[in-house]
Length: 345
Ligand code: CP3
Image (cartoon, rainbow, N blue to C red; front, side):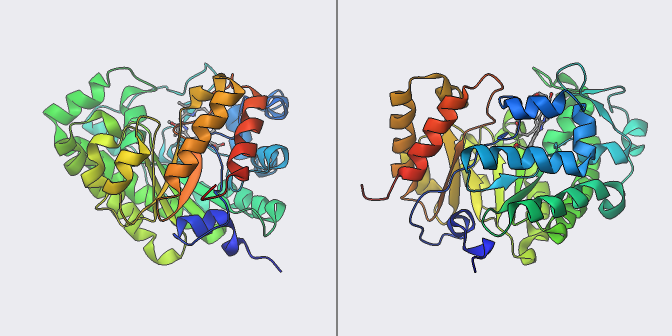
């Protein structure tokens, strides 16, 4: 009988030898898939995140279609904020918060809660997903990093210059730290709940952690990431830290006790791997490379596979989420190429 612990995805993250390179892609469940659009024609994005059966269905869709080597639970990094008192509206395209949190009073109004209660629907969804996936395909749980969550809370949505967050950083750093600490506490409870519900690995998404000077990254962000990752150490699941734009912070990131580090497409594997010794790596094809020709996709994917095979473990991924306009045929080419790659060939 096979066991999900023997899957090539988990083996790669643990740095064990595998016959081939596993692949999944960030945002693999989403708008580029017609079957996802079909579900979304019936449910809003928020309803979809709150309905375990539907969240399970869209989690399984890319596994059925492409045979990815891992599934990622369908939800959003902003889901954990709603029970804290900060619900985001997704109906206008990007996420929007009715009242951004900027003053001390607004930040103190955020409430932490027991993840088993406030996000019980996530635990229920994970149980359904595990049943649906069986013992072949592992399930990844996730959360947003406290800093990335803080950008959305303070700016009230996506942002270009992060002027409100940076004003807080440079004028009232203690207030930003207070917010980050609260988000860190909640994220620890949330991720531990996900592991208890059955996820096989966890990824912390730090999409906007790369906007600070490294000295500020070290004091503001790194201690929170460390606290979250350390809280999961004894849970027995691999921990992946994806920091977009992490190249200038590699010396800091490699102080973390995690199994794997995500790489975006701006990193050259050949140059970066010597600076990331001891870590399994995940990445790092430019999501826009999927708009190139089939030959280009194959060549670039194989380059990454060859370089990645020099790390203790390599999980193939895009360097960031797939775009809604990505052609399905390009994803097929990518999966076929990566799954056909054998080390040494
Ligand atoms: O990877 C997966 O397939 C799992 C699901 C997942 C979603 N969001 C679904 C989603 C995951 C892991 C995320 C993470 C997420 N969400 C991040 C971190 C990773 C990244 O991509 O940078 C961030 C920053 C968010 C916040 C967020 N959620 C934004 C900015 C948006 C709107 C912009 C956009 O890309 O649409 C969302 C909405 C969202 N999250 C969608 C999906 C499929 C689109 C919603 C829809 O169907 O209309």
